[in-house]
Amino acid sequence: MGIFDRFRKKREVDPEQQRRAGLLERGRITEGTIIDSETANDDGGGDGGEIVYYFYSVHGVDFESSEFLSRERLADPLKYAPGAKVGVRFDPKNHGNSMLV
Image 1 (cartoon, rainbow, N blue to C red):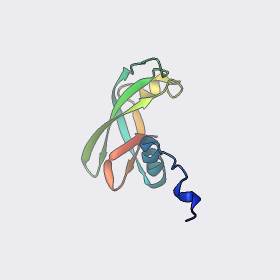
Image 2 (image 1 turned 90 degrees about the vertical axis):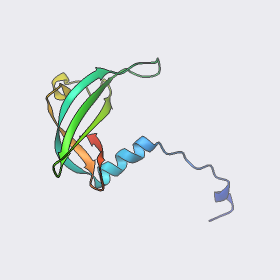
Image 3 (image 1 turned 90 degrees about the horizontal axis):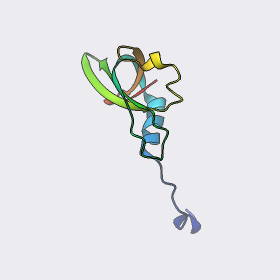
Image 4 (image 1 turned 60 degrees about the horizontal axis):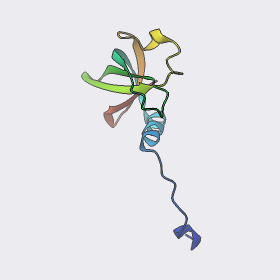
């Protein structure tokens, strides 16, 4: 470690990006089902979008989660409609940690 390394500002890592990168690297895929959706509040800084709620099962245990979907991801409205089957990537060490594929 050099002397200048001590003064170099550390980059702040977005915890959500770090979580998703870990799931992409180590995650396993299972099938889930969309339960419900609602329009996300747009406080002027975002593009609105939608929040979808989904559930999935791992080893006979049911898990429920939600994910924010941007308008670009919702180009096909039937893909995230209630009752639709979706791919879910989950952490094999923490089954409650998941994201939609």
